[in-house]
Length: 331
Image (cartoon, rainbow, N blue to C red; front, side, top):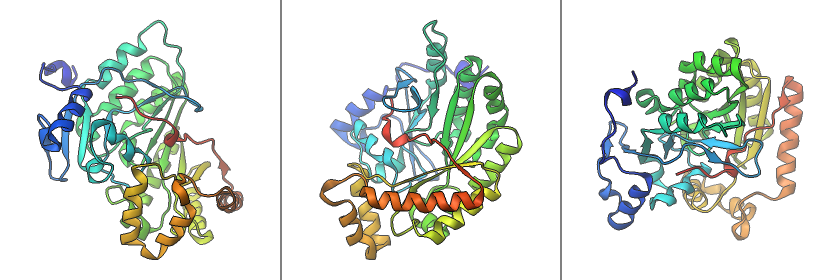
């Protein structure tokens, strides 16, 4: 019997909407029962009304996100802006206030059991990482995968968490029942950029070791080299070092794109950039002038050309990556 079967949810567990209402009127201090841990984050258990979220204009039809907020704390993360839905900030709140959807697997199981479920592809981890450290305790992602396997539903999963190898058995089961692809996010193997911009994540080479482990177990595992950051990880030498490391760890395909700065993420990232890379601030103001969310097309094409050339030399192919930044999460 699982944890929720032994300890049923009781009436006072708030919904995600209830959390938004509480924070709107009383700030973060109004969270009803947060669990503050040694990582200095607060974890608030919540109930969700739905698990599957319909995606529009994407190569997949549905998304799943068992958590909201992420202690990986990547400063460029597109999902920072989603915390505003809960009246919380895209800066420190995103990485320090994590909503845990404790009834997520059960809700998903009911949705997948409906006769109308057409077994369309589901993308996991499109808003926050499904293998951030708290997953080690709650196991929401693992239990969701078990339901998806039983429902013969194809999945694509994006993560920066080497913990994904814990669930090789379930990923193998999904692969037997449907399609299963895991994408480890490794924007760069540059250690300085990792320390400054991905402070809560595992070392990039630990993530690549997870790629090797998954591939050796027969699970399709590739790498998303995203986002690439102008002036930080877009030089030919930086791209070459990363792609060579990817090839050395068993991946056969790579997806790459350049950072996108939407409202919320933009303000936070540019503040961090000014502190960590002040010499690049003026260049970013030009690249993202007049509120632009993306770099100019010519710049993007030049970077992508470098990626293609280096990939070809390494014997890798380009994957049609899950472009998570284009899909908003469910509440």
